[in-house]
Length: 422
Image 1 (tube, rainbow, N blue to C red):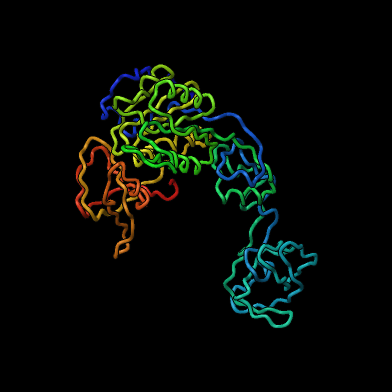
Image 2: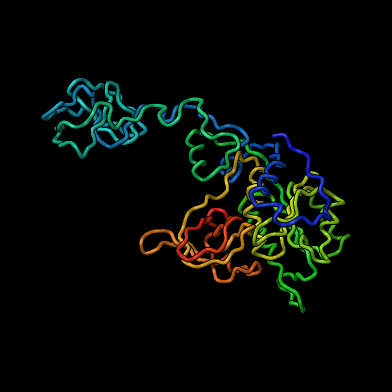
């Protein structure tokens, strides 16, 4: 995708928050993203959470031979009875990992284990529960069809078939799939580098006593945790005070060492918020505000070659904006092809919710099963953007669109599960 020029917006512009709806903001961000191009080859054990830079092709047929899908007896379909009973002589046993070397003639069969190679002259497996065995003979009735319980060579994968495409984010099941092909080294895109720092004179570090008006810097820890889940290289630059010289130095250092720069705080309209002026000087900005709650003051732009996300200062707003915008953007930058946001599910809201139309809201909710087996959700009590406890107590976002107004108890709403993204 050709990367468009950034909007030449002045950092001093104070956009109406309703001018950038959530979906439009996602569209704008996506239009400016270019995945990393550098690649590296790494051992299979280190591939989890990385993005494939090349297609994984099957070097063989999987399975590489016709084999039995069940424990039972391998025979020729011509010996199956159309009705009544049939009796066959057992001439040997075929084990998984070993080839039966004998011959199977008419009226004969072979005891076979799941996964064992189908002996020559056999094309059908009758499961052991359907036969009566006595000595070296079995007796069984009609019902099994010719070719039943037989897996063909290449049934799962054929030689040269694309198993996993470039741009695929590797999951645990993929590790086993790649290993089953005998592949021990995989080519992936390099790790994305993300630098972040908090801003504000009111922030105190853990272990220090709080002075009047100070709060502990929790945002760096939630951001660190969210970035860790994405498997990126993390550069924690600590806390930067509300000093234009220090902020400018930190932004330049971060942009020169990382692909993505994240800050928390300093993007609202306070007198000590210098970030707008600095970004006007150092880079470009697409937008400053989004019609959403929580998280209205979200900035997105670029400093040098690095993408910049200016997250709000309130702890809940930091997490909501990260999961609704930053996470998917970083997956694209990592090289993942067409990452999809967490799906929305329908649930009956059992509490009333007050909401004003005109912006999208992400309320924290508790999702569970009602007495009738249907999904129900209720809003967590305190929805304040500074109440981080609500994120720990919730297991979903209640997503209320910009056109939505008040929600009465009993109405159906859409929810987005936190599990899997948080």
